[in-house]
Amino acid sequence: MFDLPALRRAADLIRPTVAPTPQLAWPLLAERLGCEVWVKHENHTPTGAFKVRGGLVYLDELLRREPSVRGLVTATRGNHGQSLALAARRAGLPIHILVPQGNAREKNAAMRAFGAEVIEQGRDFDEVREAAIRLAEARGLHLVPALHADLVRGVATYALELFEAVPDLRRVYVPIGLGSGICGLIRTRDLLGLDTEIVGVVARGADAYAQSFEQGRAVCTDRADTFADGVACRVPQDEALALIRDGAARILRVDDEEIRQAIRVLHEDTHNLAEGAGAVALAALMQERGRNAGERVAVVLSGANIDRQALAAILAAGD
Image 1: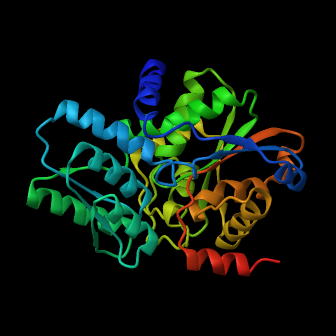
Image 2 (image 1 turned 180 degrees about the horizontal axis):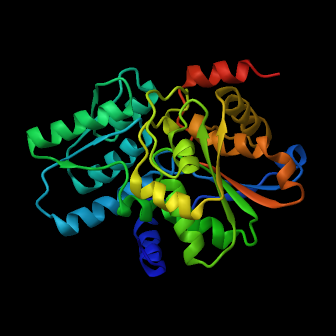
């Protein structure tokens, strides 16, 4: 894993493209939840999600190692793909991005707007990942994994910003997709010598990481049933799981209605948009409101890339 100087170099690298995102304490959230709530606004990046940080660092390191690379291919549900599409465009490289059938229309449009070729194939992320491997081999392209040390170092820059801006955080709630966000948070906390508790959050219908954390071994599930596509994982990654088991306090499950309610609360109390995965951290904080009375806590709003029709339906269903 990276050390603190390497993390600061990553922050310097991405800063011309990704300005530090705000971390704000919202009074209405504090009133609602009985604690001081800071929101790390990773919805305020050029791609609307935290992943953009990782793509920039990954491609910079790749081109140093393999300057003759001809093109890229990856699998995604959207935010990882946007990150790499932006980085590939800056580097003048073609990129093929595979997504599941029926993937979020607006995420697909955003990836194409960055110049990517988007290919719909497979029923979920894990099937799409296998198809991406085959395409990379057939065309001689570089396969970008969904989890890699350089991706983690890139996204960890959001954790550096948060911890240096907000001292004495009791705990931070963070979504878990494949694990780059929580791994970056854990590593940065440890490098800074902090005792902040890290709480991972998954969707109840896609709880492979929660089961794995509890059982002490990788547990794969047959399905990932949640509308929150950024956390719809069936197959946990061994490297991420090891770091999470060592560094997280626990992993909480939130159901889809709790996630929808958190989207409504973020809209009402902060006037910010959140996609499903971006709202799971607040959903978990709402679930644990009694534990946090009077504490200073943070939630990671990891992204805002939700389709208009889905958002309209969620907001309309509120009280």
